[in-house]
View (cartoon, rainbow, N blue to C red):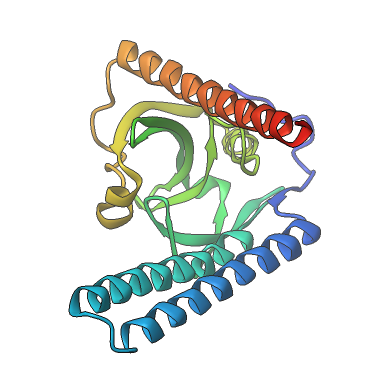
Length: 240
């Protein structure tokens, strides 16, 4: 069982103000650019081009509007906050469907005595041959209500310290974090539409889990190798 060094100390997981401002400006700027580009394609579609051109322009515009909407929904992720206090944990979490943030926030205060379990699992995404392994962390109350604390990318090692938040909550509730194995989610777009597999389902065999983790690490190495090669080729072209 995990031990807490100081159970009276408050542990907070959230984005810093600097990161929230910078990322917020970047996401807002991207949304504005996508909307502007959508307007351009709508104008093109209405400027007397052939029917096939109109259809293509309007489809591109719809895609750009969806991208702008996605940028805006990502702003809710920046508002996430987990405050782990001496007697209870205060949650301010974004609503999500798979990897897609939704509008609105979830607010809850959970006394440690009301927590049934703290769980983690790996979620494997496979899109266009690229594998990403995510670590998801959640809290389940004795009434059966589940709160998704957040997700960290195991493949890239990015995200807030939801792993430490889960460890702290479990320790203060007198428990350990339960490893629920790994599940294959599939493509990102499909997960946005259909959500990720339910937590109560059967996990994949351990050997498959290890294989997907290795493939996720290989994806990172391949992408970094491609970026490095591209940078070197550009530098050589500029030099000559």
